[in-house]
Each structure stands twice: as C-alpha cells, then as structure tokens.
Image 1 (tube, one colour):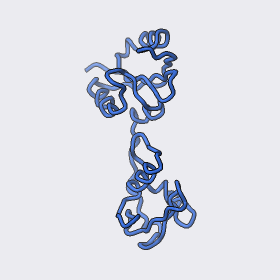
Image 2: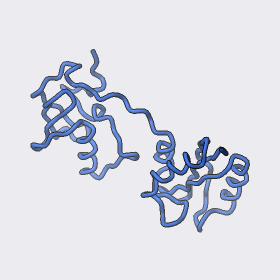
Image 3: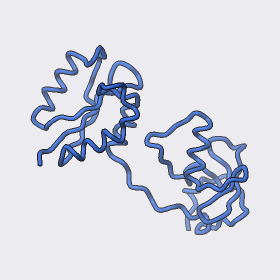
Image 4: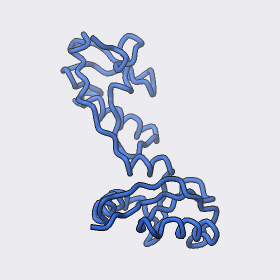
Length: 175
C-alpha cells in the first residue's frame, strides 16, 4: 500500500481552507503550484499542515468525515485551519467525569461557565437536569453553546470543563 498525504492550506479568505491529498513525492511541487497559481479563483494559499497516512483509504475516511464543510465539488472547506488540523488528529477522549468521585452529590447545583445565570441540578454521577430534561455534562454543554450560536469542530467537548461547582471548574476538582 502506498502512503498518502492529507494537507491543509490556508487561503486569503477567512474561514476557508483547501484540503487535499497527494503522494509524498508530489507534495512539494503541489504546494508550490497552489501557492503561486491559487485554486478555483482563491489566492493566497499557504501550506499549513500535512499528515501522512499509511493508505489512501485512511486519508479518504478523514475527508469523508469533513464532507459537510465542503464547498460544492471543490477541495475548499468552510472551516478554520485549526479545526481541520484537529479533525486530522482527533484526540483520545478521557473517561467520563464522575461528580460523585469528587464529592458532588445528587441535588447539588452546578453553574454553566458560558453563562453564570444557567444553573443545573446533579441527578447522578455523570448526569444533570436542566429544564426538566436529563443530560450528560457534554450533551448539555454542546446544547447550551449551540443555543448561544457557538459551535465546536469537531462537535465534542468534555462537559466537566464547562461547569463549575461552588465557583471551581469541575476539572479542577480532584481527589
């Protein structure tokens, strides 16, 4: 199997990147060509990041995951270079945060970091209640940020980073 490079290039248009794949032996020439000539009437392309995959199918899987951000049939994507790089290198998730393990009990109140007026009630070691609905911390954090028109790419957060107990972020509590 031949190795494949997925690359990210920034453009002169904020929030628009060019993603593509090539072979290792063609990478430098391709970067030069796009930097000089642009792509589809978009100029100011600069190499930002590359990742080598063992097979082309591994690279295709990453691009397929980003398809919803693709502009038509082009290799342009409506996302930041940082978000694209993160998608190329997904982080391993930590185990669920247990509120009971750090001394938070059912019935205790947590505050949302994004809006201190939002309070939630602990109803389990990993669950809270908000407006009569049960959520995990991560589900609720994403919902609240979405309601505030703030979105995460990829759409994953560690919920404990976004709630406080008695003025302290949950992730700072440990036993």
